[in-house]
Image (cartoon, rainbow, N blue to C red):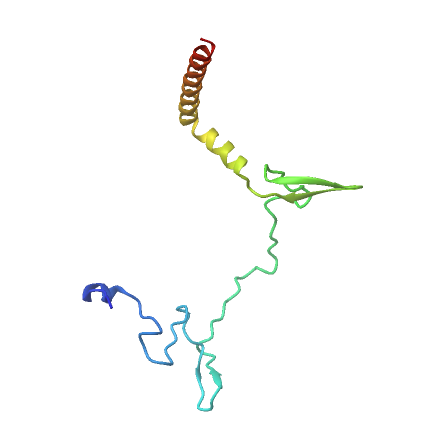
Length: 139
């Protein structure tokens, strides 16, 4: 089995498979208590519990939305409107391949022009070959 070199191993994090049972990595928040002597008990140590102080004057503070609530949702290219008798409903629609090609052609105009020129050259060659073959068939 391959193993990392010693200097690489120093940089790797410990996994639960590398240490014995009972090791819990968690997500760096720290414990808020300890396990009791009886199986399945956890004792909360209130000194470790995080508490947050509410700033002064927050009770009188009024949050206002960035956009008025009376505004209708903005219709984008990726929504479809369906009429349900007396009411219109707007639903999101999937991003399709045509949408991708349209965006790509708008962002890469030079490349699209090159491809068009190449395609025109190929079409011209094919037409000349077809005209030659029709002339040969007539003779």
